[in-house]
Image (cartoon, rainbow, N blue to C red; front, side):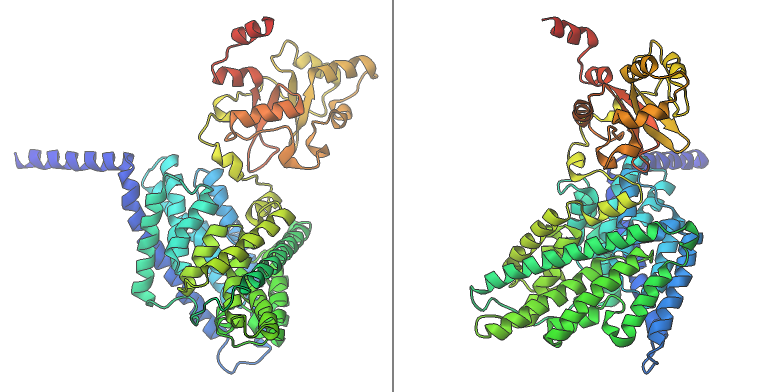
Length: 591
């Protein structure tokens, strides 16, 4: 009897756990667990990086150490990233969004480990990058690993990815509210996401862990600032212009250099990071403030401890050093450097203003504070997050209105001069087409994957036109995908094949006419505007692209590789998905 009773209780417990696993209540429980776990990992990341840096740069060390250590650190981590951890390069934000929107939230434990240790070594050696972006990828990876090991489905795994992101940023920046906003505004692209509750719980839990271990100190210590005279609003607006232009210069330089490095032979990938290490080392030999993330220097500037010529020099050198370090393939983010650059630009504007109008303006530190948010809004393109983040890291509310004015102007200039946000541009350079904010807004509608089908035939560029016509005889498509060794090449119409067969000499191949059809991948100026769709696109977008390309059939391709053909979507199938049958459409046409 006793054994039978125990078995019944075991069965009830197993059933309860299974019901919990299948319900959304488990996500709330896991949000607390993940928040605490990620908080501990990020605290360890901060402590290890700081202690490694103290050993690499002991008090009284020679100047040449500032040259040799970054080179040694970047070349060693570069080899590890190339050989063992290829998905741990860069900041981690594009990789996290790729995992969320393309890979069903899947991030490998190996990537988490590689990101943690490579970034610790890289940042401790003095590379001019930050820890916040890598922390986000580590947090997202921990969430993914925990969820998948618990056997959760892909929907639940994807719901926990932003939970880990918020927990990581809350601990790395000591900003729990901004962490929530960033996870929703940038990672999810939806401030009304249904994971809001889970994200808030994980962020708060991680922040509490940070405070229990490291104490209650803010990231920066600032004096109390206040608006001296209404004329300052005009100066803050000017700072917004300077910050916007500086942000665009930084983003364009980084993207240009990264594109240039990507043209180098693959055999050079493992030592390319050493170029960034060498540059920052040479700069650091003369100007040590350029090395690392530079929060100590920012703290001095916020309290008015650096002169005009130096802050202007720091801004220029940091833009160059961070762009080269990131573009060459080092592991690290751009959050911290963005704040450093903004603080230097703001202090430069504030120093000039205070020299010309000493009785109408606050000191340079107030403008440095606003400049931090201004650069963040221009570079990362999250204006709401940047306002709340600066408030949280400084705990000074008096500067909020000038910050909002400057941020808005910076964001507007950045948007006008660099249409594509930096993280989407970085993903595009890697051949990944992340969903835009517009496409994410309609992601809950009927999607292409619900109407796509496998193509009944795929043509080859090497097919003779006569053979291609025979292959597609009596087929349902008005245009057919053409794929070669490298994948999808383009689309060719039935009418184009028939015209070429009647006009040209025998033996001509599809490759001879594809370039003239206007539907070949190799002949379009922008891959994002080619006649194709992704599985998570809305059917309304597919209809728009059919109208623009005058095709009734579009190839469905992977977001990770536009040449990977996943299927075909037809106009009739789209109409069917909306409940409009071919019979009804023909009847309507006759009327």
